[in-house]
Length: 401
Image (tube, rainbow, N blue to C red):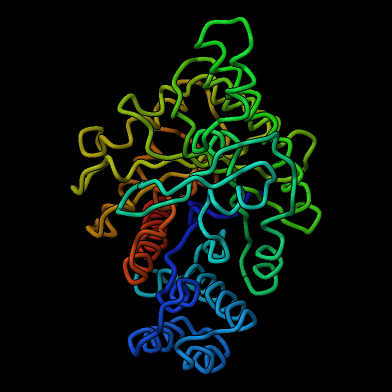
């Protein structure tokens, strides 16, 4: 699915959850600030029927399961509107071009799929970043499909979004890498091979078994009408042997095998070696139409289109060096800080990306580095504004005589 637009814009997946969305599920009582937030943001985003939400929230505690479900639905609506109103202050043509509902119906990108795949047992919490925690699981028996954990979210988004949508889906490599591999490690411990070989074989078998399950999930999403699926692989470079890098591509190919849709890949925060560690094996992903990577977090805040000014984007040259000619999603905003660049710096980051890749501007997507779930809503909205505003300024620069 190619959008007929220069420098199309997208958000990578997650958006922050409002306090009125999270507190009811943590058995925390709402206070006045939660209700004020729902009202102020509902008005700002022009979310319909917010009176219904405010009436539910006025209970402050003791919500029924039906009321909780309505709260989640409104959270999805707020997220969709954040996507579709981005750029109000910075661009004439507002809104992202490719949208999603901010993963508001998901616990987070790991726990939601793991909770819906047989064979896992949760074993404790692990700190990730920004003082956020996620629940780690152990695979105790071969994984098996339990239910499609994204269908309801997709159907709701299709009903309410006015722009083209995509569905982010966590890949098998990441689920494998973030889990305790008890079942497969125990199985391969009995084989006659070196410890490194047994460890890799356990990872590979676990990954490919998961990929078959995720392919079923994706196939069902496509059957419901989704045109684009973003395969999220934040753990792409967690293991850095050549065999493991090849497994990243093999896992993607197993997940998308025989499916007809536009597939993109998102990964983020590689080791100090950068994305070069993934080449050339990365390009063996046969069905990938776009790679979306982060660059903004490594870049400076000064203006300019020189290599010196845009040092954080040096890895982009790899795509040209390897003859890559498909789509790229370029992360132009560091998502783990509230310090934001100017819209002109964002424009320069976009124009530099176009210069060094020499891609058609219609194939160069603009996005934050990663999902925005760790930011406060007002910061996340400002980041989306900068994506839209920076892209519009970059388009204007290209069209200037």
